[in-house]
Image (cartoon, rainbow, N blue to C red; front, side, top):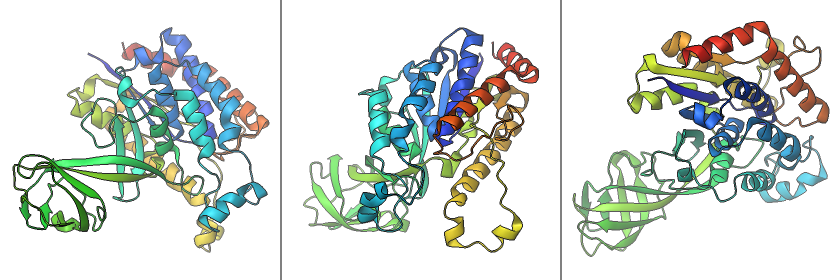
Length: 393
């Protein structure tokens, strides 16, 4: 049985490019995308696309969302504006470019009260990154055992799209549960799934929810990550043992998943394999948001330091992540993947295409949409798409 995956890159406002491509594909298959694809994966702006499609939105509706609401997410162009004063007072001179107020408002309006586990089909995978434990967060609608729980779709998208330097990190509550490995009068040894980072659970509450010592709640005063050792206060009345099941109330510090996997295609394949699907049965449609062409000459890069790299570094990291994961995916999937991506230059339409993730000018949005339409109508793209769709039957 063929297992079809849709993978959607990050790229800010350039997500409108992917949405327009998907509108053309929707016409070809004459079927809702959430019924055609078995797994939809998205990172950053791709998470917004993925969540909207999984919820049943049509691609043209998503195009309209970008057109009508992007000015709320990105309310100004320049960092030197009086509108940023509240951010500077709150965060200091190193404040992110934007508040997350607009992003949250638009996501809440788009997804309402829909939660992750409300999406039964298709499988939905969204990627973010936790700055506390320095590891990716994989939001999955088929894993109800995970610590993030049944969170709203809007909040998943905020977590995945909070690009460093553009938006602040998003705090997301989580539960860390497991089986105790040992205990002393003021200590509990957590299992191997607990964090290996020192002090990460300091000042959090740990509760024994089953087994020896059930019902006790204590404060972790010191956490030694290398030993998974939590020192608690006050002492245990009943010392936990291997029968004890604990639960810790903690939090993610979530930022844009693009720092880990701006192109989530390889992550989607890994999940499909873990679910038992054979690699030869997997088909992947991977859609980008435009390939940057802006050059950073060696003459500049050799002299740049912290200040000069602060803004372009994000783009470099996202580009590098996308290219690496595209390479990995192609090595695994070979001819079973179709990658749709074009360069952000003038070749398609003769018009300028900005690679800035927050360029919401009417001209740029119009040009991006026009370029996506022209790209999808190219004979070689039409041929590749038809071949992919035939092989995906």
